[in-house]
Length: 240
Image (cartoon, rainbow, N blue to C red; front, side, top):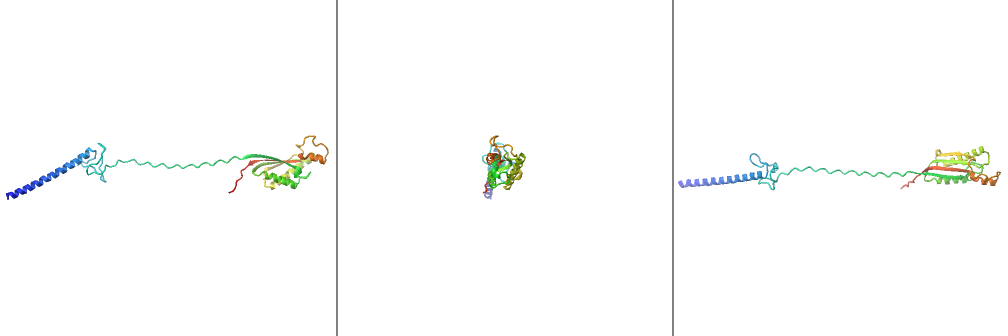
């Protein structure tokens, strides 16, 4: 009986010793974890345990040495907050190049003297076929020119009275104007004037004598219609 009790006592004593050893080891291990956590600057609660986030990360207090590896039971150190990345600048639209300015129109002044003997029969104001051909050639020379003003002035020779020659020069230049309008020239741009026998081209004493075929032929340059065109040269547009 004594021996059996002694064996039970011995077994109980051994069990207690083992239990105390295990508890001591656990306490030492927990103490080591807590000491290591504090030494490394981790946050601990009132119970001495490391504060752990909902993701299982141990929080560093920011005081003490930077953690190189978390203590046992901790995940990786909580990442430090990072600054939000700034949005990339929006690309600026490229301004369209301004269209090149159109060149200024080139002013044009064109003058022509038409022989009245080509335009009309002697002492007449009705255009001859040859006169119409001459005016057609004149209109053709205006190709590429936008006329602003066309001045037409008629002259006669010295034969006849001054009043008669004045009226004859006016009728002749009016006949020229009427024909130009039929060729598409705006009537509002054509200005006419008759000057009769004024401003002769022949020199004084050059065609002296009574009225004869020779003298009439000599005075031919005085019988004329002078036309002056003032306008702008325009560029032709080629249709594609």
